[in-house]
Length: 362
Image (cartoon, rainbow, N blue to C red; front, side):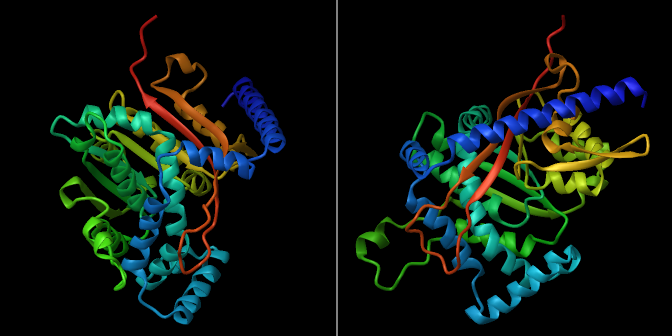
C-alpha cells in the first residue's frame, strides 16, 4: 500500500473520529432522557403486551432448572466469557440455554425496536416478496435466539398493524452462528408458533383471545453452525444471493477483531452476492474500534469507518451500496412493568442500514 493511500486512510479515520466525538458531545448534551424515551414509546406501535410475550417465549421454552442451579450455571458462563474462552462458554447446551435466558431475552426487545427503526424499508421488502414468496432473512452471528424472537414479534406487529399486504407476509430466516445453537433455536421457534402458556387462573376471555405469536406456515427459521470468515465466494453466493435482508448484529466488531482482512473479504463477497434492492443491517456497540496493520504499524479505526470504507469506498455515489439510515448512538430502554425472573438490561447501539443498488452510469 503506497504512502499517499495510507495518509488518505488515516485522514478519513481522523475525520470519522472527530465526527464520532462531536456526535457523542451532542448526544451527551441532548441526553436520552426518560421524557424522550416516553415520547418514543408513545409513537411506537410496540405494545407492552407484545414485549411481555417475547419474554414469555424464553421463559416457557428454556427455563427448566431451579433458580439456584441456573445461577450456578450462569456464573460458570460468565467466568468463561471473562477469560475469553468462548469455546467453553458456548460449548454445551446448558451453557447456551443459560446465556439465552440471561442476555438474549432482553436483547430480543431491543432488536424488536431495531426492526421498527427500519420498518418502512422492511415493508418495502415484504411487499416485494409478497407475491407468493417469503421475506428471506440471513442473520450472521444470530444463533442466540434474540433475533429469532424479534423477527417473529416484528411479523406479529406487522400483521396486527394491518396494511394492504400485511396478511400476505411470511418470513424465511436462516440464522448462522459459530456455536451450535440449533437446539436452543428450535425450542424458541416452536414456542413462538405454539399457544402461549397461561396461568391456571387466566380468565375465559384471556384464554379465548390467546394465540401463537406467529403461525407455523408464516414463519420458518433454521439455525446453521458455521464460521462465516471461512466461507468462500461460492458459499456466500449460495447463502446470500436470494435474501432480502442480511443482518449482522453485535457481531461485526467481533469479526473484525478476529481478522480484518477476512472480514473485509466477507463483506465484499456479500456485496457481489446480494441482489439489487436488498438490505444489509449492521447493529453494534457505539464507539467500536478495530486494529488494522498497515505497513507493519498498527492503528485503531472506528468500526463504522472500516465498514463504510469497504461498502462505499472513496466515491459513495459510485458504490454498490447506498446508506439509507444511520445513527451512531441510540438507546433501547426496558420499560417498567415487564415480568421476568432476572433483571433486564437496556441496550445502547449504533445502527447502519445499506441498500444494494446498481450505480447509474455517468
